Image (tube, rainbow, N blue to C red; front, side, top):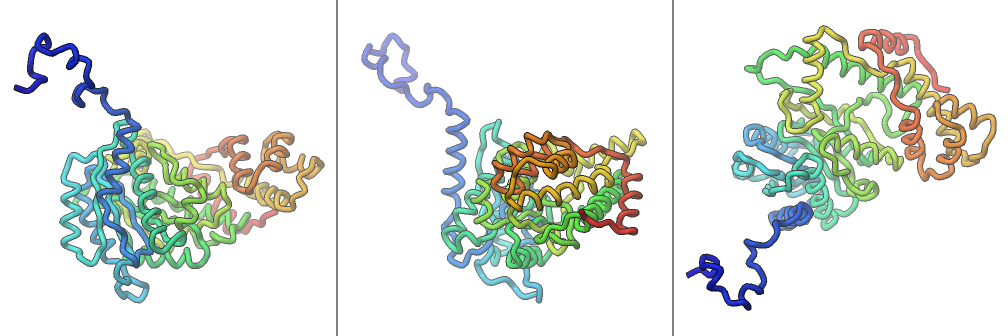
Amino acid sequence: MDQLAQPVRFHAAREAMATAPPALLAPPTDEQLLHQAERSLACQLPPPLAALQACVIIPAKDEAATLPATLAALAAQTTFSGQALPAGMLEVIVLANNCLDRTTAAVRQAARRHPSLVLHVAEVQLPRPQAHVGRARRLLLDAAAQRLEATIGVTGVLLSTDADTLVASTWLAATLREIESGAEAVGGRILTQTAAAAEPCPVRRIQLRDAAYRVLLRQLEDLVDPCAADRWPCHHQHYGASLALTVRAYRRVGGLPVVPFLEDEALWQLLLQHDLPVRHSPHVQVYTSARRCGRVEVGLSWQLREWENLTAEQAEPQVPCPHELVRVWRARRRLRAWWQQGAHAPGPELARLARAVEVPTAGLLQQARQATSFGQLWQWVEATRGAVLPVPLTGAMRDLRNYLRTGVAGG
């Protein structure tokens, strides 16, 4: 009879003092479970092909319904001339994170349907506090970076998209062209798609006006304080549905920050902090779902719900004031020129710059002397001075168009 089934009084003293069987040991900690998930991911992936140059990662939580179309779009990638990509240069890794549906089976079925696509799927169970998109995307990017380092090296390209997103047929080609032109990271243009049978979206008008405002705002910023690596035409998006960077850049910033949501924004801010050349390319395009029941706490679905609430209340969205932004961008341009000169000493110019960016003079001088990049200094300024004044979207659009019509110079 099984020893564990016997009454305790039948156990000898020596047996009672023996090491407890595994079933009676303390449950594993979240850290141990996380390490198990990391090892499990590595074990489920075969060695990379020697021709590997770019790796697409897709975190998936119960996405069996949407993944087939996502993977079909990736299988249809071509060059700009419509030719098939070189065999083995691209691979796709899907991480099925704590799934309760047939996500893994859907990926394997897609692999059979698209034999030319190098497609892998790994299934893990993350501990509850870590079972979010930030941790899943970090696991994937770390694994993909290691695979690219084993083939093409630090020039390999990490690409992220989402399980409810369709990439354009030249998505990869356009991304690689931007990187070949000098960018270390590329944010793609993210457009929303709505199924023909779906109910009308009551916030579509707000969404389009908000997108127009933010794209035109980038045009105005290019006039006031242009960025050599990200000149107009460009856009404002750098999110997980279409985000790419080199392995070199990924290692430089220390990897993706592990946060429950907005992990893509946190990564982009690290890239800016290190003064890496980044590009918001209008040629890199994807189409994502407009569902309002998303998988993260804060994301597109959350934003759509917020706009829906505003519509129900007959209220208008608030956006950063263009007048205030023009003033801030002008001050940023002057501050960058001063910092790049290297003579970080107190004086009238420092005092004027501190007033322009609304931070204490002594603090600005200290940060300027300590900063190893202008991005680091500017992020301190933004955190210290606070957010830009919000104004109603209608008025902001009017002021923005006036600036673009009449022209505005930096300085």
